[in-house]
Length: 295
Image (cartoon, rainbow, N blue to C red; front, side, top):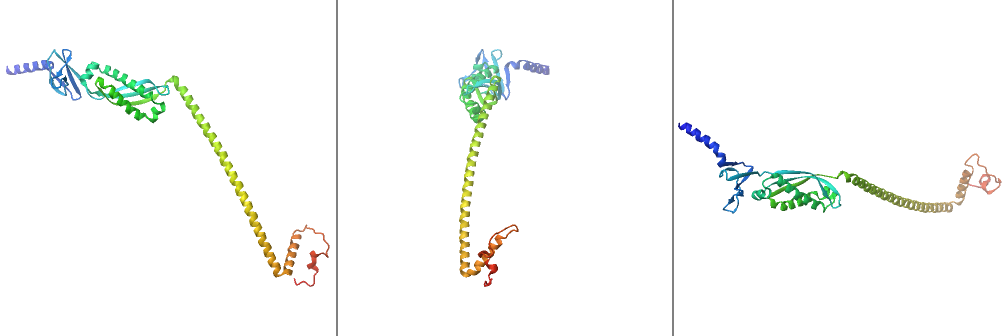
C-alpha cells in the first residue's frame, strides 16, 4: 500500500506542479503578472524580474511572462530615404538589438516582439533619414559611412531607451537608386565624366603646345650658340693658320712662295676636264721656266 500511495502522490505532484512551479531557462528572464499588474519587488519597489532557475507562483492568480534575452536581428529592406542632394535612395539595413529593461519593455510593447520591432523600425528610419539628410550619396557610400553608422547607433540607443530596448549595432547592407532616378543619375555621371575627360584632354593639348614651344626655343638657342661657337672656332683657326703661314714665310720666303705655287698648280689641274687659258710667259708658270731657282 505504501508503494501505491507513493506512486499516487508522485502522480498528483506531476499533475499539479505546473500550477505552482515554473522553470526559466538560462537564455530567458520572466516577470509575473498578478491580477493584471506586474509583481513588485518590495526591496527595490520595482517590478520583479525572475532570473533563470526554478521558481514558484500562485496558481490562477499569477501569470508568468517569459522573454528571450538573447540578441535579435531586425532586417529592414528597401526603405526610401532622401539625401542632402534631395535624391531618393533605397537602403537595406539590419539592427542588432536585445531587451535591456524587461518591465519597461513589457509595459510599452505588451510583450509582443512584432510591436517592439515596429516601434524600433520607426525610430531607426527616422534617425536614418535625419543622418542621410545631412550627407551626400558619395559621403554615405564611401566617405563617412562608418562614422555615420556610429553616430546613428548612438542616437538610436538614446531614442530606444524609452521602450526598454538596447541597440547593439546598426549596419547598412545595400544602398541603391530607385528605377525612376537611376537612368538620370547615370546620365549625369556620364556627362560629368565626359566633362572631366574633355578638360583633361584640353589641359594635355595646352601642355603639349607649351612643351613643344619650349623645345623649339631650346633648339633655336642651341643652334645659334653652336653657329656662333663654330664661327668663333673657325675664325680662331683661320687666324692661327694665317699666323703659321706668316711665320713660315718669314723663315723661308722663296720656299714658301714655291710651295704655294705648287698648291695652286694642284688645285687648278685637279680634274682632267679642268681648263685654264693663260699665256705661258705669265708669272703663274714662272717655276717651269726659271733656271736660277733652287727648287
